[in-house]
Image (cartoon, rainbow, N blue to C red):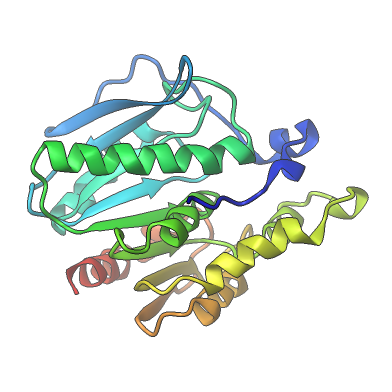
Length: 262
């Protein structure tokens, strides 16, 4: 049975408006070839918009969850870089983002990840994709990726954390939210860390050396605490939270290419 994080304590308006920054994008069409848009139902009359950038049906497949201020179409320019290293990229939005319905909360972000993963696997099977399946999360998206890696370790070949965090409470602190003023149970944060320690599949951690939003210590904590011996960490020198690819593009994609090819 699926086991999700109980993050309902964080589903408060003052926290949600501080964490989620949805942007709408109803009319955007893929600007690259071999691209498919998918609408994945997650609730009655609510669906999540996803975009699948395909380079080859035999290629490794990455299910990607982006950061809190991004949307699927932002990856139209990034996806071809994954294609160059022979990777299919499936990018998922959150509720209220892009052409998705609904309103984002922590609870539905985690719950929706399960429906997205199940549908993604069905799409791969239906269209005869034969490559391995990986999950990847950038920043806030690392929570969704971790949720799937924990619950479906037998179906996932590896997880990639980019600018990820080891503690939800610490993340809120880094972002400047006064969590001391809230009556939050320690269990809300401890379940997240427990799942990090339960990850036994291959793990790649990528982090910027000078990330001011999610300090590199968070990435190191993920790396130190996953239970697998098959783990790698790449720290991009001089990179900040939003310059990680620009500052270390060659190292970034070399690490991902090697990871999904092992």
